[in-house]
Amino acid sequence: MQSSLVLTVLGSDRAGLVKSIAEAVAAHQGNWQESRMVHLAGQFAGLAHVTLPQEQLAALTQTLQALQQDGLQILLQHCETPTTRAITPLSLELLGHDRPGIIHDITRLLAALNVNIEELESEQRAAPMSSELMFYAHLKLGLPEGVTADDVQGAFEAMPDPLTVDLSFS
Image (cartoon, rainbow, N blue to C red; front, side, top):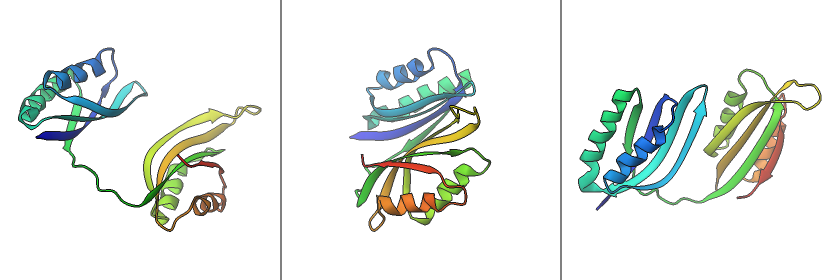
């Protein structure tokens, strides 16, 4: 029987960090399913979904605990096969003037529509002509039954400081 885990890894970024995690997974007959990893402000943050034989779970846990002595924080979360639900995938790009609280406003708006945020990437960008800081975000969303892309776009455009919205179905 297979165990399914999501690993969350945090720590100071350095060469070979991902290799050490991949070696631990491979050494215990694990299969790397998918991952998201990023370098932010000198820190490494990563998520990885791995599967492995259930009898290897304790040994992998012990190996990953040993890696924490190198200054990493590793959290293991058991997961089950997700249940399918009726959602419409939507890819969304936002651009607007950067300001404190913008992520809060975006997430509040999406929660009010019962929209699931599956991925969120954001950054500050300099405007081409003025070099003024602009907010940019790329989101992958799951729309629940009864919520349309037009509903999402309209909600963003109705904000007091409206954001430019580019929608695409993925």
